[in-house]
Length: 274
Image (cartoon, rainbow, N blue to C red; front, side, top):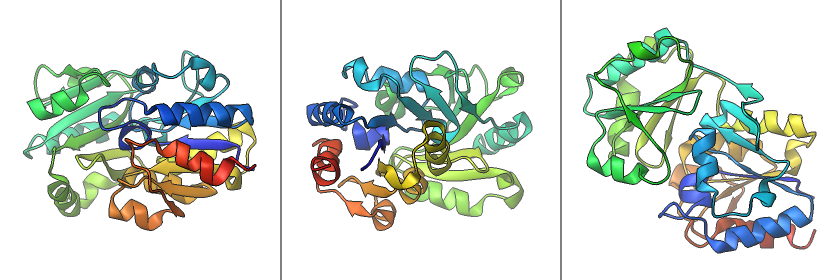
């Protein structure tokens, strides 16, 4: 029997308009009746994730957890702070930010508090974020104001430019990436977390916290930053709109897209007969 269902948010659990397909809510209600936990797992901050779940009855998250910042934090739903957290050293954050300002990219900096600072964000990215993540533009191209504020990660943004972002990573000076775990998400972000932080280690820590073997977990995702979680879980599920790399690493390739409600397919295929 599976006891934990972890799911990426954007382009997996949420549809392309950042709403929850009703089929997902119905499936989670059935899973909770069987004692399973639904665990959102995202690169976004905890508060942003919960805001995206406003359309779901809160009792479906009672006693559950949220994996945020690509596994950098684990928070019990309703708690004021995380149980597990990881942050980037400021010196590393600064060199990655400064390097990013030499490129034609936007930049997000994620404070552990949940505040997201931005630089050089265009209107397309602003529209993409609107309604599911609040941001605060930096006054100038410097992270010096954040020297005393712990930050979980930094990312480069290029809407529609994932191939360019892959080229940027491939040509970055090796020293910049020491102590860093880079990954890609949403076909528009190159993300930099502390080494050892990914959704797979986040799921493993969560499973240990709740006393569940990883073999009794299911993970769903669509992008590169979900691959470690799909590998770690007992069953890794790629939503139908997942990129090729993620689909190649999945144990099960869903026919449902994020718009259809992939959790409903997971319920029917893996849990309904349990």
